[in-house]
Length: 381
Image 1 (cartoon, rainbow, N blue to C red):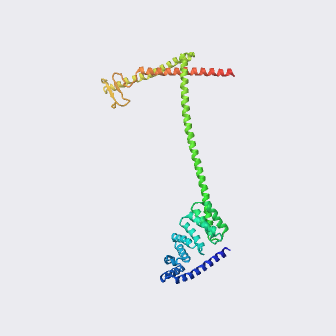
Image 2: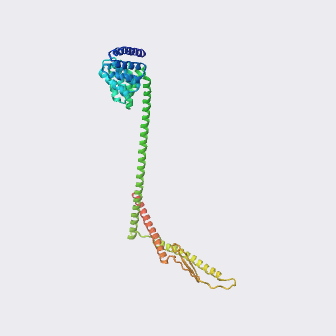
Image 3: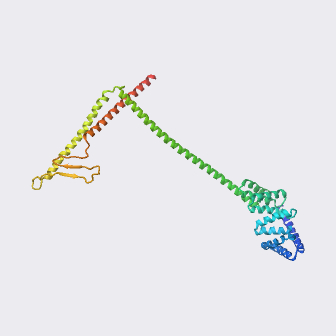
């Protein structure tokens, strides 16, 4: 049925062309010789599909008042469309529609005007023009083509949902239309694009969730670090307060210390200090006894006569070194410049001994308080 309709349209169009040709030759008799020659050459070029030549001569014809007819404009518009001069063709379509609204070519020119607007990227104007065409010529053979071009306008404007409906209508309602395969192809593209958009949306959502999770994790780490630091400071403050409390109790005499903590411990510490000092003195004496024997052996010569001993002075060259020392060995005596004084050593030993004794006393008070609190809790039970 669709093929028969197209064939009927082609026959009608051919009759219009034949009738138009007859009118052209009838008009030629009314025109001047030069204008008649232009019309004849333009019609011949149009028949031979020489569009550039046809445009040239037909433009001259329609510029004359006598040659400004719907047939001449129709041939000029078609020649411009085939030559790819869409802007000029669209302007001539507007001029044609304003001058020949009741011409048998009006339907075709109106359709071409809407299509040319789309080809010129004027999609909104094209939608309006083709929509008017569809309302006025719903039974026309050009109706499915007009639907297709409206869908193309929506597609180029990224309005894929509106384009989808029109493409589906072309494919389902007009399967024999020459644009049906292209409409199906565009439907496939829209479907694939929809899947890609969903995938991109999912990737975006997943990326945002990962980012928020990472930020939350880093925030928790900062909170934990801050809490740990606060906890350590708090524990340190509590420990210092506890030590101060125990020291106050010790100074007040609130607790009577037993002999093994107050006296025996001090004696044991003194005894340990004396042992350490005695061992150091023994090592120094042994080293002192070794030095005279070595010097004596060195003073005996080959003849068996001992040589007179001379003072031996050893000086380290770099006085800036921490190990700088001046040693003078004479008659078995030795002096060291870096040897710590006895008063400093005794002072340090006394400080250490007092700290140890105080620690013992504080530990005793702490244990006594723990035992008291345990007995109190057991008595309450």
